[in-house]
Image (cartoon, rainbow, N blue to C red; front, side, top):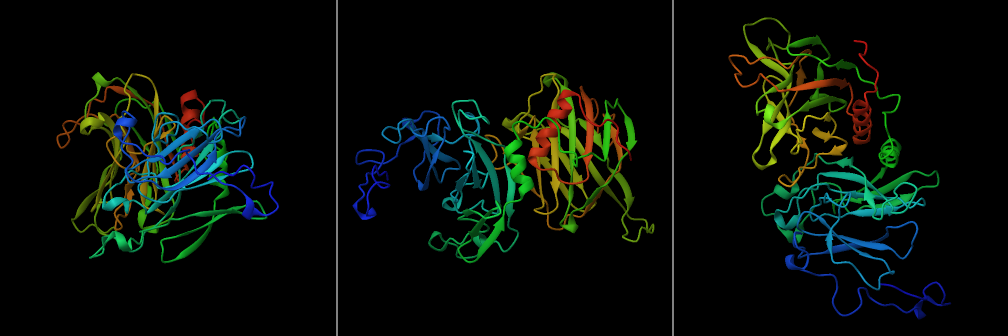
Length: 445
């Protein structure tokens, strides 16, 4: 609704209002109205926001749908006319994924807009799924010092909250009439007197209060201009240009059962599509160790460690994948489809023991599952333990047990391990630094 005199009348009851868009029909459409875009049969909880710092009449209106994306329309004249509805995107191309779950944008005084959303495109159970993880993205207004383009662009996401409690939506007799959600939702933001941004959220049963981590917010604000990571973001392992069958002692990955900490693995690789194939290993740390917890040799042995390889998964093309095992349980995480053009590409794997998820970035972009997968993270088994694996072997030859693992037809320009889970913004900064050839060189062990 829009009022031309709300701020001018003495009594607000005398203000006049009109509904937008003009006419008797609201924003609605079918696939045919926007070729190539999904259908948005349901729309809820619209948010009107300013998209251009140079022109206050340029506004947007976004809302949640039940088709795995957010819908948006734009107006250049304060709401008199609107563009056809389309999917909200990060950069004019990549859609921002969201199930039928509540989003909340919050505009700061500098014109930037922080949005909290679910960052996945699950659509089962009429959209009442995919709400266990909440994410932030920061919108940079068009024609502003932060963003000179003609559209608002949104940052790569950062994890905000996660829920690991009872799976309410899996209980017997679940129905949409009592759709208690499995995690955070329905956020309201508030800026406190000390400048801290806080919010409340609820799953319709419990109300919870949170403060936005200032480190995360700083990263989102500076993500687009960071060219190197902050001073406290230093690798514990750095190996440059390892050759075939190169070996070096490194550090072990920690125990996920601690539910704190984690690690980030970073590689700069180059290869051409025709020179690689699924199964080829880039780095391997697997080792056979004594199975007993007291380390006494009782004759039982297990394989622990991780390796990173090229994999092919149908229409996603050739990807990069991280495989981990604690000796009893196995885990794997795939990138979105990658470009193998012979140029350097930087890939990060972040293992976060708090929310128990693994995420990736490729060339400063967060992997969100692409066109073929609803989300870009993989959840660790609750019982997953210590990975270990400290003997790094690069570009190894094939073995009898793994005959397809050798012969990676590319190069590793640099390999790093950080002993904590980096923020997405930090991963992006590390990626830019490695591409430029900068960095700390071979770190102390």
